[in-house]
Amino acid sequence: MNVENVGEIRALVLDDNTFARKFAVRALTSAGVAAVVEAASGSEAISILSRATNAVHLIFCDLLMPDMDGVEFVRHAATLAIVPTFVFVSGADQALLNTAEDMARARGLEVLGSIQKPISVDAVRRILTKLHDAAPQSHDAGRASITPAHIEDALNKKQILLHFQPKVSLTDGALVGFEALARWQHPDFGLIPPGAFITLAEESGQIAALTDYLAVLAMEQCAAWNHVGLHAKISVNLSAYMLVDLDLPDRMEMTTRRVDIRPGQIVLEITESGLFRDAATALDILARLHMKGFPLSIDDFGTGYSSMEQLRRVPFSEMKIDRAFVRGAAESSRARMILKSSADLGRNLGMSVVAEGAETIEDWKTLGDTGVDIVQGYFVAKPMAVEQVESWWRRVGDRRLGLA
Ligand code: C2E
Ligand code: CA
Ligand code: CA
Image (cartoon, rainbow, N blue to C red; front, top):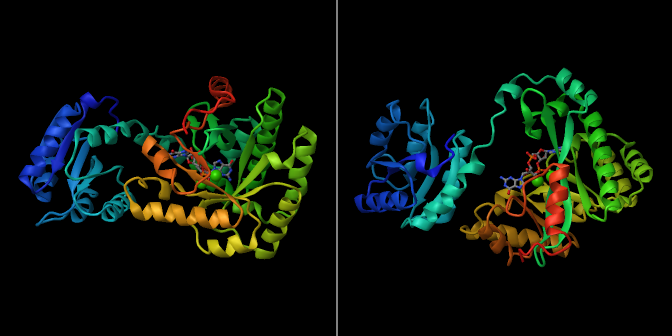
């Protein structure tokens, strides 16, 4: 959705209950939404959306409706040429709202979130603040045409670089470290996110060259920051495809020696899914990285399979709970319970526990009683270029971030 301003948004309220519908219209209007249309049934909404004039940007969709329920409506709406961004509204339990959100996303639709009935102006305002984050720049033009030759070229021309996102302590807001995230600074397409080229690099066998290049960059940056007094751990993402290369631990260690940092400053994040294509080799590499002093982190925890098995055999010192469990935890007691139980497990295994994807003050507050130690997410800061990190750090410095 390409609307910068709440005052330009046209919204559709779909609810069979007249009172609830009027209530929602009033809340939306009070929150500054430009125009609000109403539909009392799914079929009425479909006919409004099918008319090309006066495109609707945002739809507030009730779930429980007699003729066509909200889930069926999403199924139909997904086939339309232009589909608005969804917000689900229901008096039903949050678990059902979460299912609806995931279902709509799985159908390729944009979802801002969900609101419990009755709708308040505050809840609408809160949802609308997510609009800017929900519409990332599209790189489809670049992505469609990316080939291994382009990646090769990008590496040669040093167009691939790192952005850094802070990780801070939940108890006192202190800076713990940064996660290094790959970005491709493309001369025509601008900044291309890793989703557009990492998988391709994995498939084309270029991930080793890319990872080596980025690990060196991260370690050099770590050393440079040490020199100016910014002592932080740097987390590097290690694709599971790298766990077939028996020389990796020696190469990593050699680079730390060359740039003069301790391996303990470089955390290696490994996504749990697909860890063990070749178990003997993967465990060989992970054991040796650990012995050399590199902390190992299990990334996207909770989304892969056989994660318990991996926790048993790999000496992880950090658990990063996937943002799927952080998003919406404020409203969902189920997500909160998963967070809590994961954090308990991590702590009992002597790991530090990181929650990723904390986007709002509610997320931050909710994490407070889950036993999580460290938080990463847009609420603290988005991933930043080196210069931005330095000015961010000068601003917040060693002073606690004032978040706790
Ligand atoms: P990841 O390891 O799970 O990294 C965290 C991702 O979450 C980053 O996306 C980050 O920008 C995003 N993020 C952080 N905070 C928030 C938040 O509050 N809300 C939301 N919605 N998102 C947040 P990014 O940079 O696009 O990276 C995507 C994935 O690409 C990474 O997921 C990682 O799996 C992969 N990746 C990135 N850099 C590298 C790399 O150098 N090597 C390898 N192998 N993979 C990389
Ligand atoms: Ca990661
Ligand atoms: Ca992750």
